[in-house]
Length: 450
Image (cartoon, rainbow, N blue to C red):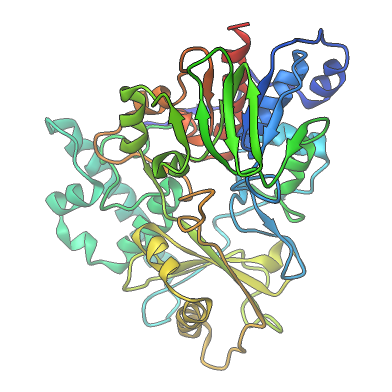
């Protein structure tokens, strides 16, 4: 295969939740005071492993809810995951084990359940679709071959320009570059590394959704933890024996701190470190980039699309501008469609109002389904880059970034500060399972210092 990713079906360090909860009660208690910053899945994973080893960590969360970029919204009357949605590759994936423990309902997706339309709104034939798919995968092979001959890395867009710039003007190719590559990585082809964009690893199996919400996982992981919400961290002092964590509701002292703040938050400088973090770490924080994926969900009075088709695709002239739709009716009772802003358009849509976004999406839907479609009754939009507690969707590999940079982001400082989050996982960056495993890794690093 042209992919450099390796298929994995096991992870040696996976802890079963049943044993985690049962053993924590009998574990030898520790006098170490540990603070975990962030109640996303990385922070929860770290705190649970510490609890297993006899440390009741204090978890500080800035939001009024747990989960971080796992955000199940129920304001539309049904659960809608506006952040993480899928278990990517469920076989051997630690999130699958958690889903089983939580008795969470799952829905196996089928990427082949797709109706695909060209820019005129005409459904593309199966033969033409297959031809376009083959052209895309052939292009990926050409990119891989090209970068192997180059002395330095270039962007995916630059690589395509060298191979055949017509690909960038072909809407069928553009659809795949955004709905496949930009969606998968979180980045934009104008910035993605042609050499390392897919240097991470995968679990196998068809992706699955959570019809009742991804928060079943985070709700499970909160059991037995001491979590304080609405505590926004703005400063960390670690020069003395103890670490002082400053928040909008006072300060907290600990012997060690696990920091699971999103990369975008670390980049923003809104959390002040005293002393400053080591220069190599600071440079790497600024070097790795955050992706710009956003979602919009539209609920309609009734479906005007095939209720049994899982996905709808549309070739759009503006790359990343709502080319891909998920049919919620296939896994929920809601007559709703979820669409996405990918790559550079994922950021551009954040500057628009909900009404403007809705109008743009409606234009795409009318191309596919006709002008007589009803107006949506409810709309929900994510704006992850504008969110001060996220500052982006998930990290991606731009030119100049390698797997060593993600590893560096996961290194500790003076055996006092430990870092976790999807951006610290070289193997599984940009994924929930990557964040979860990074939380366990940071807890193990901390425990090794006691």
